[in-house]
Image (cartoon, rainbow, N blue to C red; front, side, top):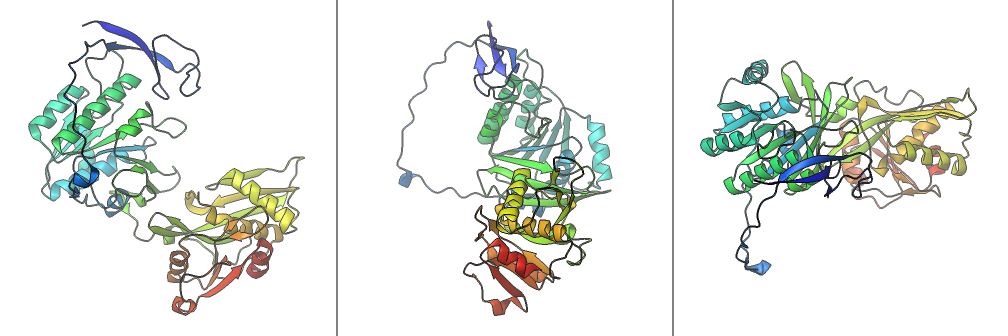
Length: 450
């Protein structure tokens, strides 16, 4: 079989017939690598499929089965869909293999047949981890193999309900002479697993490596091919882990699942708000404000801490952890212009306690109050939570899911809620003693909070 020489970009998968220093697809430099692909003869054209009106297509009922891990089922949209292809990414050592092995054991306990194929570990190593996790019941078949053809043959022979492939960068297709992990290898092996999942009706989980920037390694087409993309996040200095869905063809993409790493494996966190408020002082410390943030169908209470002090250098320092740096700079400018706080010569440090990462604009008011509290060296009202988006003119804009945020704050014992001046979606009397304060501008909010 003749081989056709081509060059593929390791970042975006762009294919060129000649080497280029600058990739036209993604703009990166020196990312095109040589790749030999079999020059296959053109296949006979298949018969043209008949197009049908969408009203004539019968509705498909998705018969999910649970994984036994409710936090994982939440992120996947309610369970595992037969015939789906799921890509799980995360930093090395974050717990990807541990989570999937726990899932494999729980699914097998429910009478499902599971195959765990690893291209990075031996069957003995996987057995050691399974023993450490206490997975003794059920039947999980182990396969230590890198050849994708051998793995497919085993899958066709075993006909499992669930397949775990750890990892997609470690397997290779013998027809392609490039090394495992290359652009062509990852793309072709993932396509082979996709065809197997769709034709065989089995669910396949692929483990994917990530780059130093935190994105999935390999061509971007890999994320387009799969049905769901899930990231496993966490900090090395914290025991908790966050499972975040960024793509899901069978459910919402904004759901998160929270776990805590312990000696016996990953344990689900039933009340994540208490996890982020473990050492909260109750509002008696300057620079501390609690905010209710929404992640998918879950409401979390997270503490924001800010430290503001005079700068010892010509240019003030600004540092953030868990919140967007540019957003904090914008809020500080609004505080200085609209609220009269002289922050131009102050160093500012803002941190989301517990390593949480907050992205929604509804946390703006909490950040602003934490900065104002740290600057004034005065604590906010005891038992206060604040939520609201801040505009450049100093107005506080309405936020979504206000009812859920207030209910979660009341459930954890917070008696004062500072919210935007919008129509409240719930009867205040229902909130069981919670004082609702509304503010239309940032200056009004600062006056109420202190």
